[in-house]
Length: 139
Image 1 (cartoon, helix red, strand yellow):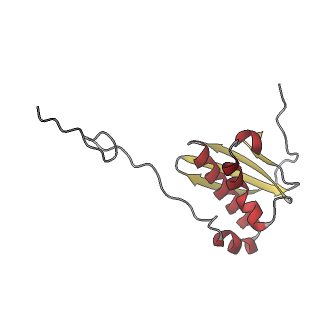
Image 2 (tube, helix red, strand yellow):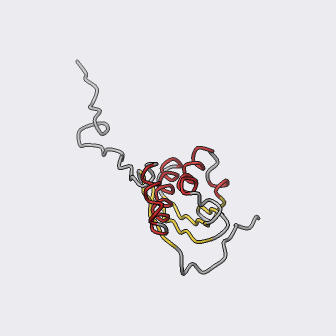
Image 3 (tube, helix red, strand yellow):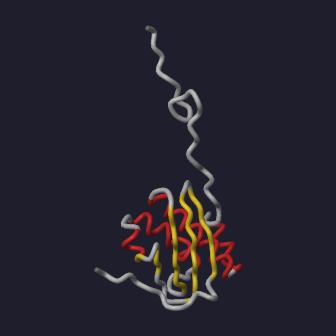
């Protein structure tokens, strides 16, 4: 059984950020460190196997040039990998904004502080889905 990677410290001076996308919610903590990223107590590469999702999570750090200066701890739940990756991205961007207000302009310019509000439309009564009706039958 492998041991989970850890980041030392009690976290008293952690900066928090919350990100949401679809049905995913990510609670992000950042602290000064060496650039480690943990997602649900697993390394980033172990949790997000797709390169696109890893790049999305790291985008705020690359945009501000802080990828080697901050440790990131993320707790994410709900949704699938795409929603979780985007929720993590927003949470990290918000936490960096709280840490360094000068970075807000770069983050906003890259579109990293904008919440994507698209959600699944609910199913309506009498229909087969959100908008699809029942199939017409002549007989």
